[in-house]
Image (cartoon, rainbow, N blue to C red; front, side):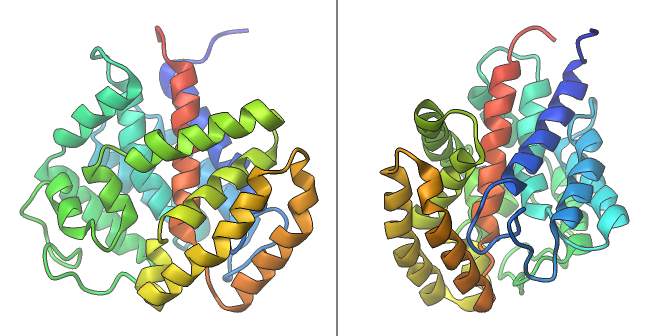
Length: 286
């Protein structure tokens, strides 16, 4: 069998990461055990398939990768299903394609530091096209206008209200310091199964205020969600047989969806964690 090229392997890793996230029971989010928020699993599957070739493409900037992937998604499903995922995946893919020395995390840091004004313009175009919920107006570098700063500077201005922006300015610390730790620990205990992804998702849900919830419903709702998720995360983490938590997780899922709460940022960080782990496994000669 012919070994796939590095771009093909990156695209496949992205696609597989998106599908693995859909296979996990993630309370409040869209998954194979329940649609929600006027979106279906099929929408996310089509989005992953549409964006994957762009995510692995060689020779394009981070900003262009973001714009083209969002455009491909819009053509496929006509709505915003994966903007946050794309914003996190684009620099990770750029780091994986970077031939400079260093591990994936160090190359990612250099990619982020090198983001340009053109990257910001391309990303702003993508964000305007995706029109994410709860965006509102920003006091600085609002996406409704053309940016005059680099993408990293624009993210720095948004980091207090958007956790994806915060990760840009902190070299994806949530992914590399938290998500990958939770992922490795769950895999060591339970092997490769969807409960591992649920554990990562609950880690983000229980420890980091979900900024999509915060923008749409306020800081109080985001803080309350942390309190609700904490005991459930702890119970799952203590399970030798994680399927024993299926009923409580399903009940939590129904309760969040009845309240219209979709912790989208937590889901985005979960996909980014899976993608980073997959890219780490690809490290080596292309």
